[in-house]
Length: 73
Image 1 (tube, rainbow, N blue to C red):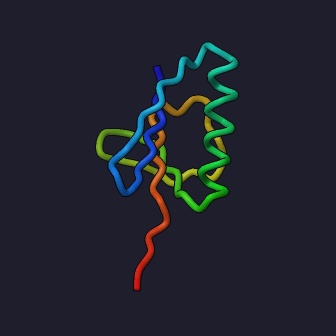
Image 2 (image 1 turned 180 degrees about the vertical axis):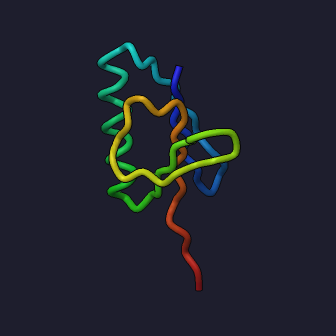
């Protein structure tokens, strides 16, 4: 089971994905591009304690985390 974690100002939301279900993969891909087009940064876990920024949907990623754009002032 794969997971997409979306961070926001209220915490996070988690979306489980069955990588063998084409409909769930399509939904996960749409979510990926909706979030990244809205300014979120996507990172996939590459190993224990390691992440790498990704710019395109990876259907093989076990865990993808989306971070909102930081707003400073």
